[in-house]
Image (cartoon, one colour):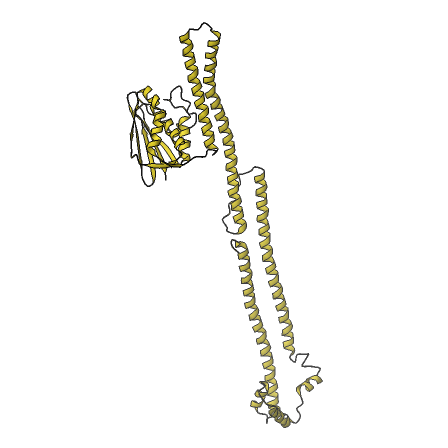
Length: 419
């Protein structure tokens, strides 16, 4: 009976009606009994009065004992002897066509009995009709709800997800409607997400095409110059080859980053998580940007407990920190220092990477982790994918990243890994 609220209400209603009927029926039976009793008592009283009037020798006590069946056969015989004319009551009544085994002596009771029988049968029929009506109403409501749910499902199958079918009652069909509503909302979100994914895929392909088009065009132009100008001097040719190599490196970085992002998005990466020190992650990341730091004359200072550890995939977290460090170096002032501070407590491990440079424009802060987004202070060689990749990697390790920045003073990237 759990959650069958409508059925419970129907059964309770029927039980209440039956109880009321039984009480009423009991009152009716008691009324019948009282009616019959009054009729009998009145007639018996008249008979007793006639006997006493005609036979004064009969004691009233003996009459009462006979009526209550308490008198003995001997007493009855004495009464019959005293009257001398008394015969059995059955013989007397038969003379008037009344058989005690078949007929009723009191016509008033016979009439009342027929009326009460009609009332009893009518009451039972009414009770039966009321119960049938209640059950019909219950099943009609149930069928209406089922038809309503069927129509909703038909609308959903037609792609109409704009249906509000929330129901605040707690019966099983209402729960089904609410679950259907949740499914509808989920399907609606899936449909909307699918459309958004298509739009994002289209935009991403457009961005990728644009990002690849520029370096590839440059490579083709430089190769054409080398091929068409056979008398090109060695120095110019070396410059072209160096530029071609740089563009090829950029293309390779872009393609590799895109592949990494797609693997993370599709959950196809099998992260090998183990306990590693935060110092080791930072040390490996610094190695990857060491040459870039020397080129920009930027030093890196690390502050933290060398024993602090986190559970993560070392290779991928090094990738994330490397991209952030690379971004910090590119936007730092020459002869400046990047401070890396880290700590760990019972709730999380935190890494802060702070540079001293141009900072991030206020309008760019909310977009810097978006793919292919290039801020106002981005270098011409930036493809706008490194920070997006770092964010995806960190979030895949139960972490999050945020940035605080002040223009012309520098930026601070704050990474927290939750335990």
